[in-house]
Image (cartoon, rainbow, N blue to C red):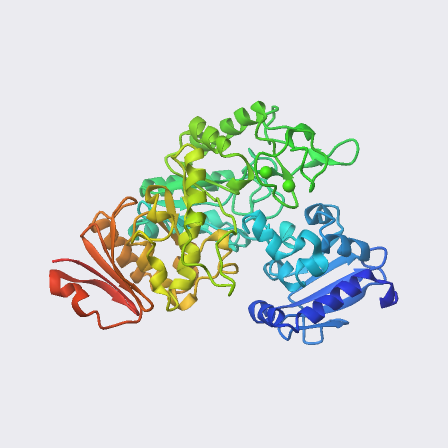
Length: 566
Ligand SMILES: [Ca+2]
Ligand SMILES: [Ca+2]
């Protein structure tokens, strides 16, 4: 048995132990509530292991196996590999592929083992901490969960959409459920009845990891954990029969190699067809990608995606073959539009190019940076113009047709619904998010796969209907999250009532908003002079009471109401 003093990992775990005693650490314990076992071997996984228990029910790190039953997930590392991965010096994806990290137990529990658990990066983690990651981009595809996430991500989301509004039809657990395409198919009539017009489906291709966000053989749709190509086609056919469009999740910033080259480097990329389409070598990868320092392509034109190989979109052959693949997804599989994953990862001109060459019926980009303005007290500033302006500028640079998730509205709504509804009015008297300046290009949401089923930026769960009362009555293209619709065990009526009101009154992405009140506990707005909506705890509306001016209540619930004209 190795002596603990020989293990460098032990000092990292010691730091974690101290971190868990801090307020930030207690917050983590409260949030995660799972128990992990970490087996560290001095030389070889499985031999002379020293066992640690990271108990995030109690907020403790202890030597020895968990005594309270089975841990939720167990990780095994060699000492030096744990240190490398924890310090950001080894790509965990490669570590996993090479067997340098092993995982047992619940994969969904494993995915929750995040860098949050470690002290702040400045203390030990180099560029590996959550805050750093947030600056680099989306939490979506494992970015914020690099330690264990890249290879363990076990679910994806779907995105079902609503009326001229998309909504996320999957969540991170969808890939765990066998035959998810078939399962979703049985819900199509219900989606159609609920006014849903588009469904965002998970990435369909062969991938490293079960959720599809590290795609490998792009043309191979028979290797997905959601189902095979025929099942996908059958799902999309069923959607089309009910007038619902299918949105494909286009993950093209980065790519997973499927083989090692003659030097043992993971540099052989395959397209998944018998011919050479989308087969690439090191020339595909940006040469400035530190995560995969084996590329020979041009420097990246956008943000680097941590822990995996970023693709060189300036390569004309790649541009042409990716466009062909997307067009194949339309003609052969039946997809109608796109959701561009990690759109900050490559220059806006390339989104423009792929839009031009593939003419989607609808497209939305995940353009997300964690640069929301906060005051010294850590609270959101009231003025978030810079945040939304950056998204709007990107949309323009990308050709002006593509839409983007309205991250600004999301950030603001998260805090506004808890007694700060004054935030919902900007200095021009308009909505403060992207919908206040470019509503026709904004896709609003409360939570979706990108916020990882409320594990990141959780919307206050008891206020979710207030969120829907806002986005489903306002301009932009609202989207409904799969979890809210299918997983929360809610009656679906409140959402259905809101979508029906939207449809009945012709509220659309460009509708105009006149804000009647924006104070701590009351937000009221008139939309298109057809409906009036209210959210907030304030009950006495005084002269604003719409029933005093030819409106009647169309739907209402806890702290929200919508009125239609008599
Ligand atoms: Ca990268
Ligand atoms: Ca990139």
